[in-house]
Length: 286
Length: 208
Image 1 (tube, chains in turn green, cyan):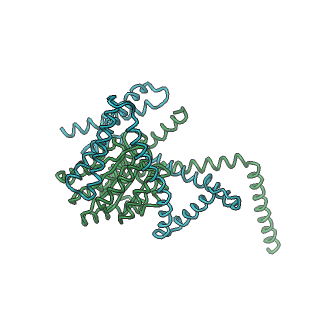
Image 2 (cartoon, rainbow over the protein chains, first blue to last red; image 1 turned 180 degrees about the vertical axis):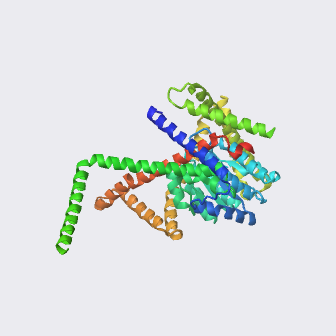
Image 3 (cartoon, rainbow over the protein chains, first blue to last red; image 1 turned 120 degrees about the vertical axis):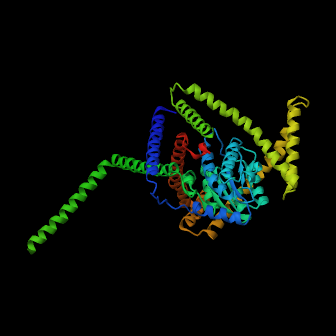
């Protein structure tokens, strides 16, 4: 990291830290406060589809893709675990265990841990089965993984498929399998190629950063920390938008200063002439 | 006891996370400690691959034993994995000269199957674009398909389609690049906020 990037990164992290802690404290004190969150269609329909899966005794499929711990995709893996927890908690009353797939073995522990936590919270640990979490061979653009998950979706007859984290174009195979077996497909990727395909193939796509706010949308009572994270993200996004607009305006002004000055001068002159004429006409009538 | 363990886990995560973060900044005195921690992650990842292979074999063995739908495929996978593991072990022990056999198996099976799958990808995507207009007729979907067609035509570089070629290049350079940057900035902000939330050590996962 060069010094400028380091300073900027530190600044962003500090602003995020301050925003999250301050907002979380505020929300903890204002317990009666109800936040109206921006509607995200995917998060609105996920709990309903999990309930349908429980009723029809079909499993729910959640995939981490190539996200793993200790790599650049660590945060994506944690975000998928955040998304997985409330869904598995809801599905844990069913006889069918959910199907969790991943291609980075470092995510195995995270997935098993999240699964156990969700079952334990519902006091249904007896229904937990470790083979619910399945690893398929890894690698960038792992087509073997995509083909394996596609096959598992058919074998297990899943009701819905939620894939998020790190996926490349191979996400198309999973989407195709979900479509073929009439399963609702939710998809997101932190890779641009994968995100583009996810948007086309998913019945209800999640875009970019929407994966990271699952903890604020899916639980019945989201924690103050998850809500504050959502608000911090929105605040940061607003800051970035303002910064981009300011930089764009500054660049345009610097680049075309003379033209803008002449244009503004002409505009002032025209307005002056117009009001002058109006004034003269009013005096002649008056 | 459970509460003490939760506090310990949170403190450990917080301390190690902050040390690693600090170590990533240039000239930081925590750089050696961060390097050791990152090295540990690499070692854990290597062990995790072994756990992953065992998980794969265990899941498919269970499917064979239980007679689940598609169990013959699981049997083929299980036997193929065992044969390849045995073959590579024999080669590494020097009982067979070189690694021609496992190399041949890899290029003859894995590479060709993955290439065939990659070839199918384009057709899946075209079908998906067509389906998009059938199921989700929105302005965004129509715009997406029109843009896709223009960009695909632009790639052909036909002299007769001069305007389309220019438009395709402009779409790739301006709106597509801007959209991609917007998505990446959003993902980066989301990742930063999630990372800070985890580093705060107040995540419910530490308490359960």
